[in-house]
Length: 480
Image (tube, rainbow, N blue to C red; front, side, top):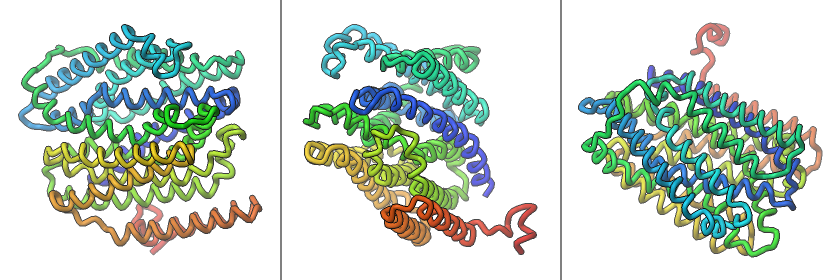
């Protein structure tokens, strides 16, 4: 129970920085979609470029965040040797990447469809290389339980980014898409300065013996990470190549903008991961660890379902986050959110093979899921457009989640409360169907009123079954 309380506390801090940060970042979505019409394709460029960035970031860090947590908690490893070795290895790979991009910038930008704007490619390459290196000191902050500094730096980075975007696109009435990338580069460099203390004050030592052991552990995580991020971004990278319509960038921009509304699930999952991962590896030998895994899964599902219902209940309000000419893409929101929930469940299931140092299983599961996603996209996008992208992610995560569960129960059996989880899923599905049917009535205020009532009922069920108020301090005595 103590670990669950620590998990809740850290998740709240990381979640605040993640959710508030993403919410602030959402200010860029109405800004971009207001300044760049869907027909201009400007937001399609941003969607496409940041999909590449997400994939490259995974490749440049090659699973060394998780590997760092695993090795720094091994009693026979020198924690600073592990940290230094991790920094040097990620830094070397990132620098090599930047050099290669600059050497081949012309053919690379042409293949990506940005031959007229090669600066888009090299600026983002430098930015993602800096971000990859900074992932390690941020992991160090998490390992040292410095959640507050972690959160403040993340929020500072986002605040500066938003401010500079507002100045250029709103106040100066700028139109050039490339400035969004230049601003991002500046913010990443600024963040590096802020992490100066975590990057200095110790001897940089490349411990080759430690590195060999870390690489042996991390290569399956790299494959897992690539497959996992492809599940999130492959559709946005492949879309320009497999969608045959002349409005390709317009359609990609609509899909990217609408998907942003669904990203609240990604925020919750990321916040949970930031807090959960260090606790899992630090307490790997604790007797009550299995019980924590089982309960954490149930609570994760409960809160993500609540978030799902909240978005669906107020989608008619949330849609104003994006420009009105992007609203045709709102039908992907529930599909993308459901896919993100399954991705979060898959993440929770993934710890069994990390704890027994069998990370190759993660590569296999994610590879299977990614193959399903790619197949759905390649077969159906030419006919159904971005709707196939949404269903491809749903299918990919769903398959990876199911396969991981059944194999995990063989090698690392856990008694997850499946009946309780299934009950909440069924209730959420029924409420979502009711909200959808009510929406077709055309009455906005009636929909919002009934949707709010359904949310209250769901929360009441959760409190009654899993968070009895009488057990809470101070206020509990009023409910006995």
